[in-house]
Amino acid sequence: MMILSGDPPRSRILTLVLVVIILALAATPFLFPGAKALNVAAKICVFAALVASYDLLLGYTGSVSFAHTMFYGIGSYAIAISLYGMGPNWAAVATGIVIGLPLAALLALAIGLFSLRVAAIFFAMITLAVASAFQVLASQLSWLTGGEDGRSFQLPELLRPGTVLISKSLFGFEINGRILTFYLVFAVSALMILALLRVVNSPFGRVLQAIRENRFRAEALGFRTVFHLTYANCIAALVAASAGILNALWLRYAGPDTSLSFSIMLDILLMVVIGGMGTIYGAIIGATIFILAQNYLQSLMGLASTAASEAGLPLLPGLLHPDRWLLWLGLLFIASVYFFPTGVVGRLRNPAGDKSAGNSH
Image (cartoon, rainbow, N blue to C red):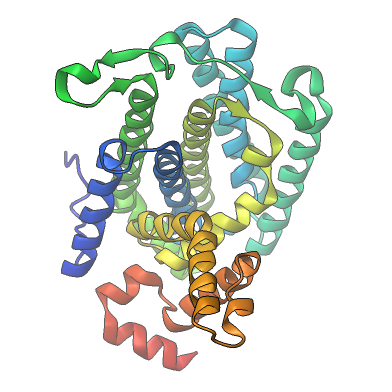
């Protein structure tokens, strides 16, 4: 049985970009000191896995789901509630995982069986309704979830920032519980992305692509399309819930803004489109570009605005003012969608094909 997917990036530049991103993420605790860089790297890892799981649905089955943040939130809240209620120990972590993952899978199974039999637009509407109901429920059950304030909790002692595993005097740098948590996030995210790559390149993944291209023809060939789509929905939900667990462990917090907000769903959609739908590799590229822009574009614009002001240039200092970073972020995304209709991965894999696709638009 093949362990890895056997699906290489199929582009030297894409391979180089992926290697640079992965090496930079792996070396972040030592190359980029400071809490912000580590937070950004951890967020890229979590969102790369989360976006890859959504790509399994959108890119490989053509199903638009708005419930993905709900599964992400289930994982976050499961680990937060168990650690808050049972205290900072490994039994609480195991309880959160044992409750969160099956709950996400069961909900995905129920949603899939009830709504994937109908047209895609109804599936999207049903997932939107379920996700909205879950968000309201999480806010109102404040005795359990902490309501709008969310739940803060402590980690087991091994993962705490104050736990020194390797002293600075030994190798010249310190490895503490915070860095160990980062590598836990990094390793689990990488394993989930590799597992998704294996799934989409298996016979099951080929059937999903056949359903995406022509569902009626796939049914005529004897494939049980509802079963395959529901199975894909469950796999995506499990990965999303796992990403939620990692995010909560990293933040030591779960709340509506960090786990269930609709803006997270929009961010996931943008990352899938930027990276390239139906590629899985695009999740890594899309998450990296989006989160770096989200965290550093404002600072870069501030520097550019100051430089333009000192040079006496008209209009530019105002246009590049840091308060307008969201406007420029939006323009960058519009430009990326227009010039890279198949995403960054699609463009790097097939420049000529991407150009012709862009002309057809």
